Image 1 (tube, rainbow, N blue to C red):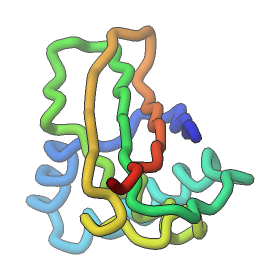
Image 2: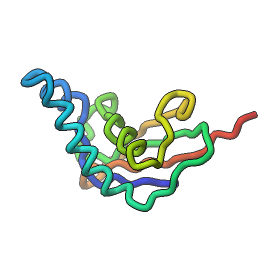
Image 3: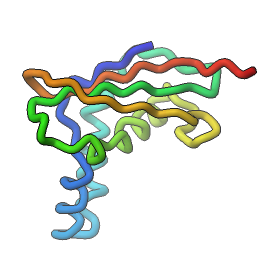
Length: 118
């Protein structure tokens, strides 16, 4: 299954900076971001078989941005809230891969793959 989040997500620098102004502001900002993310999750099926692997492709306008600042926190929490994910812990998601691709706008594509147990 693939999920496209056609929205420029906040990164860790955004979160740190907002926390410096008000310790409660980041929680409010995350909640607002999750509401936007949920719009892209409508009618996505519930994942029934675990564990899974997430392959994240971050499409970015600016190649000077840092891949280590990209954050899935709000995305995974929104996926749990709408019932796509049972949980985002390591038992359920032991592998997350990230890559960046130059694009004309910022957005995220997540491919979800079942991990076959040996």
